[in-house]
Length: 101
Image 1 (tube, one colour):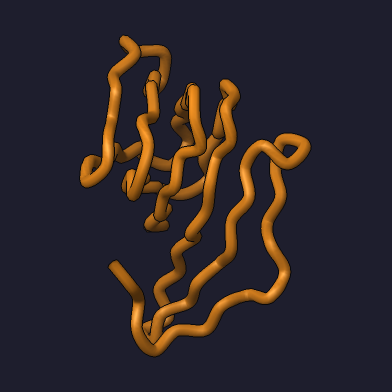
Image 2: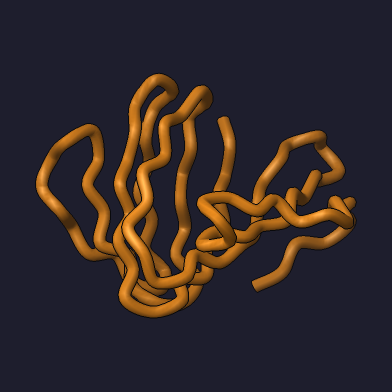
């Protein structure tokens, strides 16, 4: 439940008028992740890189590239390739880790 030997950006990434807030984490091997929270909302993410979204706490109702909505809970994840998109709907705060690449 933690990352060791990392650097963390001091300034938060704030998206969608504060409905999604995260911090960028860079691991010792140079890989990058973000750790954040999405507050109750429905948000669309258009991707330029592959992303794997890992749910830490809460429930995400997700539509990937216009497909059916699927619920993801703690310990579950979904992946979307570069050039794709996903829509995430939350009814309570959703804590997540986004793995890039």
